[in-house]
Length: 352
Image (cartoon, rainbow, N blue to C red; front, side):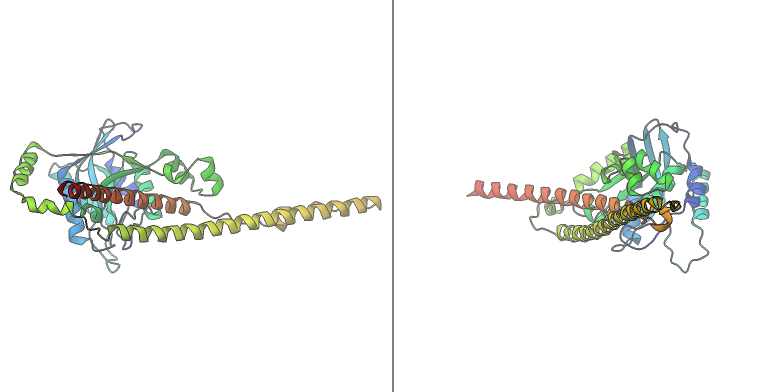
């Protein structure tokens, strides 16, 4: 089960916890073979996630929680959620699985949807493509096929638009994770690239009619001056921070490429040494045969030339996926700013 851990977009996982608590959340609303094509979220769930981060999220600290709901055909309906409690390393006696089971049992007693359908996590400037999230989502999706992870970006939300996305692991990546073989050959055989790791599921936020009426009343009472900040031409530090994080990931990618190139050079050098050894062995046997002596016994080349361990390529794929996420964020941010600048230029030319 995903648990809290301080850091940028980090989370830890335990497969046994997921199988124990999340496995009981199997919904009767859909078949096991149906794929989730849409996620429907109640507005109350969105508010609870935002409130959870505002109360406990500070800077790069990640907040996480459990999603509850049911599956209807190919639609996953998320109707409730509850957060993972804030605890430190001193709380050694805290049992997350027991806590989740008690929460779901209490919700069932008051006739509230208690079926486990996934989890949510906040992110810091879109830094969520990590090995920890991959392992956590694999544990969830392995126990509950329809489960999703909701990624909430509070910093992007503060720019004026709600940033909430639902992700699932692709079937190809699920097969590779089951085999636990992340070698270059296995990833190449499975045709795994950073574009084919996560699949985004469309989200629809649904509110009751009473809530829609309330929002309409609140919109009429809201001051017009509060909306002027969306037209501000000043660039915030959002773009600069994304560029800085992007450069850090590019540096990590270059270091990983150096490691892989070193491995390839060592493999090529070993192949040359093996070929030279076989040629010397063949010449020596020919000389012994001309002298009437028996040939030398064959030796196991794998013992003489121990193969180099290939570096795991999953980290490179995750870094590439995170770089792609940063590029998408920068593209969206710059597109909004450029639109404001062109609009301001047109207004200035019209006034002149």
